[in-house]
Image: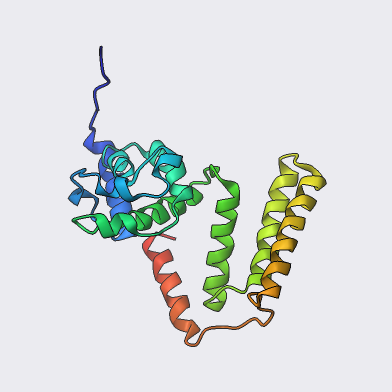
Length: 204
């Protein structure tokens, strides 16, 4: 029975490795595939890709595979992988970096709703330093509705989605978890500087 042979091409792998390491702050070359991260990943079975496999993709220069897999979009940033890793590699930060690279390359996300959630969360955080639930859900629904109509989903799909979130909003109000006042954090300028620094380091 034949097995495929891994092809390592430094001229293809080095640019991807350096970009991901620089932007995520994680030393991927310290990974020796012990798979402790895989044993603790709560979404590894569901996505079919575990943190160790994702790192291996990047090291081998498999750019398309690294940017197009469910782990990048389904990672819940629980940091279990980094806690278990003997070299403290935080795959959640790698996934965040790959999301950004994917968006900059205008690659269609595997999970559009997760992408919309991610975009709106970062947008509100950069403007106010925190997320207001009412504003968040409004912007999130607008993005989803726009995409749904663009891809022929129809108004019924949009209305059903909004109805479900309205029920969630009412439930949150009953538990006093819905905030109507739009607050900003103190020292918002520091938050803006962090976002600017991240953008500058990403090259734009």
